[in-house]
Image 1 (cartoon, rainbow, N blue to C red):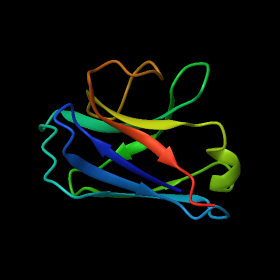
Image 2: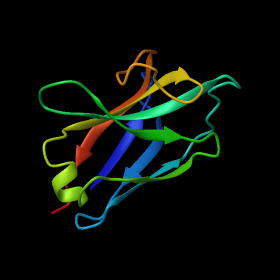
Image 3: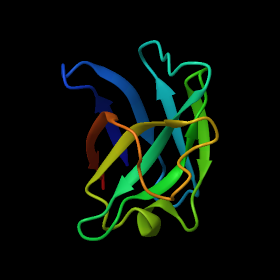
Image 4: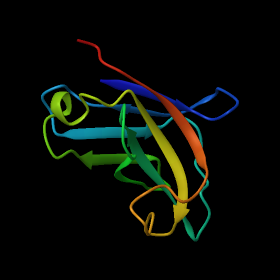
Length: 111
């Protein structure tokens, strides 16, 4: 599974990938990330219906290995897209995105 997340200018910024049977979603920046000292980038699964679900924070280094609750083929089965929002340090205090969505992209299943 692969997602290329881009800003409104359509320039790719992050790539997220996971093996269908694996429980780790790897996120790698392919452009500089600058969330700010008191801000965090939070990755969200955007289900076909219902509220976004946090997958974790992306550190300023731009490399994250995020644990999934089940193998990716199951955990991301009904997730057509991913998005990244700008949140307070430590992530969203509400469990839902509170800041602007900076990057998004469709989740492609390569199987």
